[in-house]
Length: 248
Image (cartoon, rainbow, N blue to C red):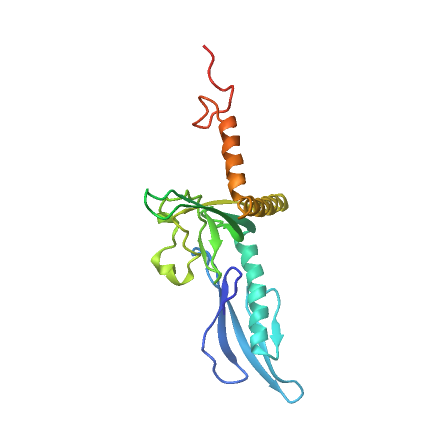
């Protein structure tokens, strides 16, 4: 049984006769060094209550019973996940993955033109420390822990940050070669700052759209060229500010 939380409940198909132990379920930890937590499932029948299922195990704080076995499985998984985190001391936090994708291509002479773009996106991911090794992990959508990715520069191959082939079905997601990725805690302040930055970028897009509108584009470009010629002074072409030149 899989969820988008860390770890999952494995349900064996070992069902036997009614009135006895019919199944063995175990919680699979996302960390490879943690042993699985097992529970036994029994079935009871009565003329008054009908069929009732009961989960028992040393890792459960109390016996869990239900008349619906699927509902029982959900309750057991939630209870074992809490016990797992208490046992291993794992603490999962929300982090941000920020992706910046920019492109500027100057066409060769005689070709059709050039293109420039900038895209910024972020998403919230999980980050947790494996108690024994202290290594940082993140979670796939299947609840499997893989090594937490490190910062990646644009146009640098992703290499070591891809999960091993054994986790091919649980990939966290390949990162684009041309994009830059960074990671930081998903604090309210960081989220607010990112949202504000993206709002400003959207405002700038709208301004540029008006700047390059058909009826004003020639005037806009000539005015822009004039402004650039006034602001560019000798010695600043490489990006240094006026007044930064070293004095004799």
